[in-house]
Image (cartoon, rainbow, N blue to C red; front, side, top):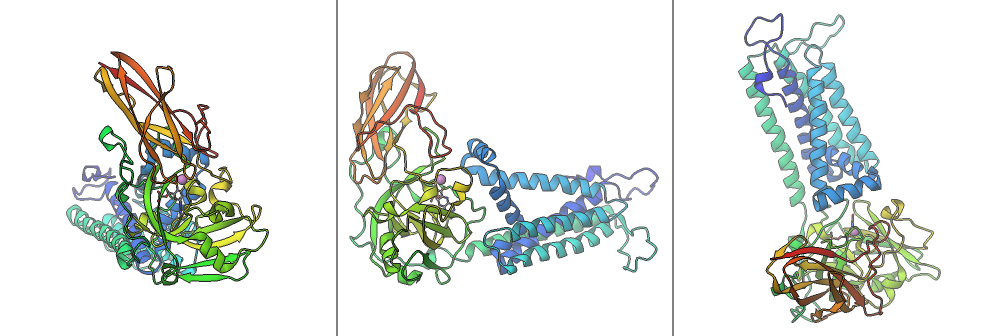
Length: 526
Ligand SMILES: Nc1nc2c(c(=O)[nH]1)N[C@H]1C(S)=C(S)[C@@H](COP(=O)(O)O)O[C@H]1N2
Ligand SMILES: [Mo]
C-alpha cells in the first residue's frame, strides 16, 4: 500500500503539490476496493452466489489440488477459509499496486485491471455448480463501479491525460491538491468499506434459525446423560456446545436459506418423485438422538469430532415416501451451494438414527451447521453422510454417481475408523511426578467402544476406566490413574470396539479414508 510519503514530486515537476507515483497507486487501491464493495452490496441485494470476490475464492477451493488443500488444513486448521481470503486480499492488493504504478501517464493499466478482475469474477461465477444468470449482475456492477471510480479518482490524482488525437471523451478534471485528493480517496474508501459491510450484514440477516420453531422432541427434552464424561479430569463434555462444534465445509460464505424457500426433492430410482417443504418435513415422525460426527480429515489426536443431540426425520421414512426401486445402491445428496455426497442405502435403512436433522441440542440448526436441514448418519464420516443445507436426494447406483470428494481422491465409502485420543496430559506437558490421571475420548460410532487401554513407555497395555455409554452412536470417555516417576515419559492409547476389533497402530494419512495410528503424547514428570 502506498503511503503519503511515497507521494513525492518526480523529476521535471517543480510544484510541491504535484502528483507523483503515490497518487495513482492510492487511486487504484481505492478503485478496486470500491469495485469489491459494490460487488458485495449488489450480491446481497440480488444474488448472494454472485459476489465476485467470494466466487473467486470459492473457485479456488474447487480447483485446489488435494495436496495443497491438505497442507492448508494442516497449517491453518479450521482457519483455512480466513487464510484463503487473506491470501486473496494480499495478491489482489499487490497486483493493484503494480497497476497503479503503471498508471501515472496512462489510465489504461488501471482500466485493464478492473476489467480483468471483473472477468475473473464472471468466470468464477459462471463455473459455480449453482450458476444462474442473475449471478452475473454483481460482477457487472463491480466493473461499472470500478471503471467510473478509476476515471474519476485518477483524474483527480494526475490530471488530464495527454489528449489523444481522436478521443472524444470529455477530459477528466485536473489534478487537485494532495490534501484534497487524499480526503476524496479516503472518503471513497470509507464508502467502499461501508458498501461491503452492509452487503455482508444484509446477507447474514436474510434467513436464520430464529425464523423457525421446532416441534417438541417426541420423548420430551433429552435427559442430560449421567456419568458420560470425565470433565473433571480434562475430557471434553459429552455433548459439545453448539458454538464449539467443529465446522468443516467448502462454503466460503455460509448458505442462507429461508425456510419458506427451502424444499427437498427426492428423485432418481424411485416409484414417485417427492418434493417436501420444510413444514411437510417438520410434520413427519421425528426422532431425537445423540450422534458424534467426525471428519475424515481428522488426524490422529485431532479435534475434528463433536457430539450433538440431533432432532430430525428418519431418512428411511422419506425414502419410503418415494419408494426406492430394486437395484438402487446409494443416494447422492446435494446442498444448496452445489456440494454433494454419496451415502450407501445400507446405513440409511438398517434402522439406525440416520436422519434429516432440523435441530441441534434443542434449537434449530445453526446456519454453519446446515440450517434449515442437514443429514446425519451414525458411523460414517461427514464427507459421505452429513450434507448440510441439503436440497436434493437422488437415489442411484454406486456407478451412477461420483461425489465431490470422491472425485478428489477420497474413498467411496467412509465408515468411521475405531479411534481414541489422549486429552490429558497434553503432548509436551509437564506434570508433577507421582500420581496423575490420563483421560480422553474414544469412538467407534454405531459399533460402540468396549475398552480403552493406555501404554506408558511402551509397557503393558493398562485398561482404562470407561464413562457411561448412553448410546453406541456417540464417543465414549475414558480415564486412567497413573503414577509417573520423575523424568520423560510417553503415553499411548488404543481402543477396542464392540465388534472386538482393536484399533490399529499402523500409521496412515487421512486421505483416502481416515487416519490410523495410536495417539501418543510426550510428558515430563518433575
Ligand atoms: N453442504 C456441505 N455439507 C457438508 C460439507 C460441505 O463441504 N458442504 N462437508 C462435510 C464434511 S467433510 C463434514 S466432516 C461435515 C462437518 O459438519 P459440521 O461442520 O456440522 O461439523 O459436514 C459435511 N457436510
Ligand atoms: Mo469432513
